[in-house]
Image (cartoon, rainbow, N blue to C red; front, side, top):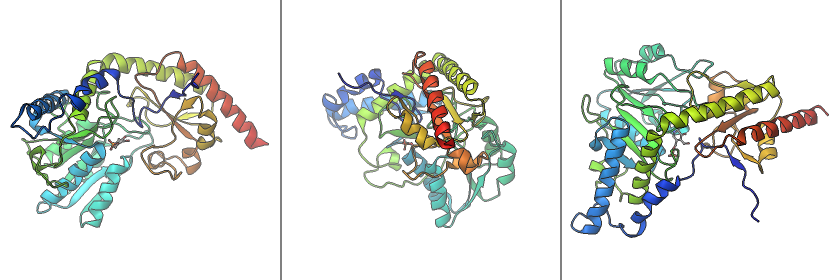
Length: 389
Ligand SMILES: Cc1ncc(COP(=O)(O)O)c(C=O)c1O
């Protein structure tokens, strides 16, 4: 018999492909394999139709228009295109960019690139809950500001930023507003009209779709975002992202987003209840444990807790055969550095090194919760005893 796999609680790092998504994708590997750009025969036309249907589904999901969706290889590429692309296309108009300290490295590293290339940046702080104060955005905007980038939901602490207020400010000041919605899409409603979002980055593998595919929403009117490509070639995606489109992945991405949105209300309620159950049980068993990040503005499936005096690396090794969790962000390098997100909300290095991120998702079952709570409590007690001897 195969050994039992650990319970997966790392849904922020990635998600398995939903079987319904896989089923939708399969014909596009073999039967409908044409190049969507080969419009002079049926093979190409059928693939083209699948891509355009997917584009429409994704546009509807965020209240955009199909021609505003650009397919990419994932959120990292979408973010690079959005930030570097606006910088390159608008440098005659300004040189200042604004973002937040808790953003994903994909955004923060693009800001490093901006600085290395003659642009100026402002990185705004967050409060102890992980929230950005919209008034700080208003204060930071300068006459030469081109873009404000604020993530919709954080990948470590699940905190949801006040996009609507920030969007209003950006629109009133004629500054592009971008959001990294990688963790938020399919989990909270995202309406680019209501939020005044001009650029939105998302990824397939966080919503039970395949890895290696994502999209960037680029507003085409009121205002029309001027964007230069960063990948050059055959001129696909209206010249914004050259390269043959990955039809199976695109079909999978659209199916995954469609399912997540249709099931959103019910599923997020279920996950919120499971998360709260786990949180209350852990806090009752380990009274000095502390939840990191706002509880009121938070993704339902996220729990990030500091267990004082316990190294999260040691705890993760102890749990490895039974539970798959993460400390800090799985998206950065293998180096064990304190999480920049936890530092930004005021945690010390020691508190950051004692934090565990629990990511609950579609295949988390109610029966998992008491098991996880008991196991964690047991290992924390043991590790604390060890450190005292
Ligand atoms: C908030 C956020 N932004 C961007 C990314 C990068 O996404 P991708 O893996 O699709 O490049 C991630 C992935 O971990 C993320 O969580």
